[in-house]
Image (cartoon, rainbow, N blue to C red):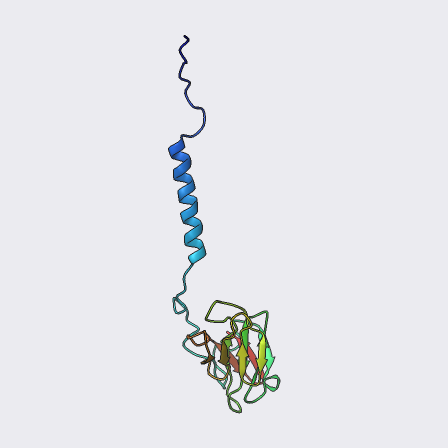
Length: 155
């Protein structure tokens, strides 16, 4: 009988491999879960824009549209900016996110004053951001805009 000699391993130990795999899996799980807290740190939720000029007008985003482009009682979607701008009453302008609060789907279907999510059927008023049809239960996130003369700018 011959005895086998024990050779030291040149690679990582089984324990190190299992620990690394577990840590990687945990990192993936935590990243996938993300934060669902819509109010965390957002300063844009306070206002939905105004109808007059402000000191900050022109400081911030690029012009989205002319006031004449936004129909009274309805609005217009700006897909690239993920925002919808509405004019609830003559001279009053508001803006809201076009990301559905139910599952973060982008919304591009606007009819009259209702924006609809094609993912699960939620509907929202673009005049005040409120939910008109579930499954969403949270209103749309308000976005800050400024109106300076006939120009609407995303702040």
